[in-house]
Length: 521
Image 1 (cartoon, rainbow, N blue to C red):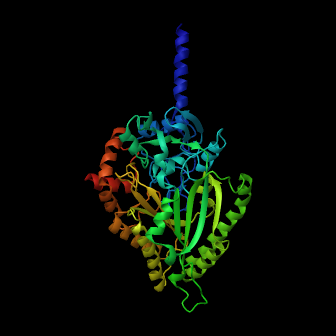
Image 2 (tube, rainbow, N blue to C red):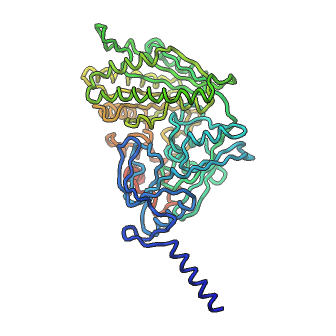
Image 3 (cartoon, rainbow, N blue to C red):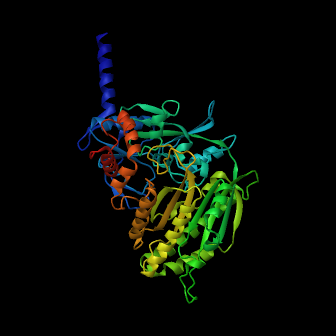
């Protein structure tokens, strides 16, 4: 009997020793939460790079739990990342960085309340998630998604990303529940049924409540969208009435300003905004059959990818020769529009992800702002013309800060806290404007700051958390004031799940919250 207890004691000690080791640099280490050898992290466009104390690449839920326990044991803080598409510093930390890209499972279920739902682990890409939905019997889809399908689900949720479909609002609003590993090491579920208040904070939590393990989307049987691409003279077409009619007759609207697309070097007045055109894209649900098979779409992808790379390489020459921007932009525009207006039917994912993955053209500066649209959309039209005029004013000074496009989308508001489209009116519309230019384009920041400041002053606009915004002067104090009520509501939820601020290791958020709450964090 004594030998039996001795054996059990030895077995217990052995098990404990296998679970824990001591690392001279990092303190206690749980074997299932061993950091990877690489100590450097870089985001998608290379602008954010840092060397935290440790980087973890978990593959299971238990890994996440153990990493949180390890952080508590070693008095470390945690931030998370996925594919690195966030262009702001939200993932930056000196302590533990958790990269969730190995968490990629999908389960599909028929919920008695919501119908078809799909649960995706945090690290799966939208492309792989949508493939799992498409391969299901019956084929399924989400209603709206970002234009790029390489983004990871936890990233688009945690930052409040969105697609072009008007009534779908931001992607977090398509969720019916989510699971987060909190500071206690518990896996907690958030949903409207459990607590609507907590769910409205968790849906766009900026990584401040814990590590997102999984999110559950409401999905529906696959359907088709007709995608129309039309080109109009800006002066002849763009007015509030035309835009409102288009929005009311479509499921989603997207329209672009491609800088100086009417440039004509053979004309006595080569730079003439009166020649510029607007590119208008609409999405309309339809029962018509698709225009292309999946095989045809896959076969066309290499050529589209190569064309995108070539266009980007062409634009990159403008960093050293910005004065050539009008000529290069107009040349690319003429090639792009050479086929004229088009109208094709696609399954939802193929329509929403109509452009090739940005993985092939990484080096871009991107800023996005959102503001409440007037009911007649007059302020949306006004901003389009203001941006266009400002670019021509810059050109007169020999400055060409935007060389790809400005992209406009109009979607409904949300009650999700900290969203740049938060509004108590569920029918309110918000205009999102994306500004995309080649990385390190001269005068970019000067132009972007001017545009952002005007939008802040005129419309109380807010930037997209996942894109560039920290370079805007006094943006921390501005956001602290603009989001004051929401931050105070969010903070009540945050302190419930992370009272010791294990997940609050981010200077920008600390500054914004500190000002809003009356003290620096």
